[in-house]
Length: 145
Image (cartoon, rainbow, N blue to C red; front, side, top):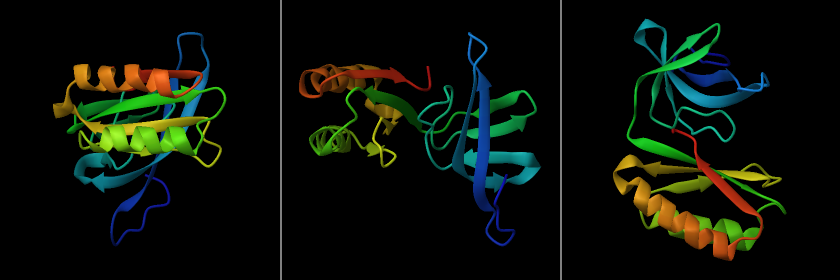
């Protein structure tokens, strides 16, 4: 944990993974410290694969390991041109209907969807298929696959 306050044990974790091509990807996410050196993610990653909000992780020198999967899946959305207000509103409304929420950095070159696993991959795939007809240049992937 970095930037943690000892009184509340909330802070941030730095997740790092090595892509198959050797590229190093690092992302800083909000987290809560748990006993035994574990951390619970409070946000889903937009770049790093393999985790979602609610997952419990152990941080290792070589990256991280999910020791308990939480109740959510992560969907990583990319668009060129960047996501505009219409695209963000469309995604937010579509995923709100299944209990999810959408976040994006100010530049909106990508968005992160945290959606309950109970919604099911078929539902997510249907939403994203429709999104592809509404949002130009859209690409997406399950971040927890």
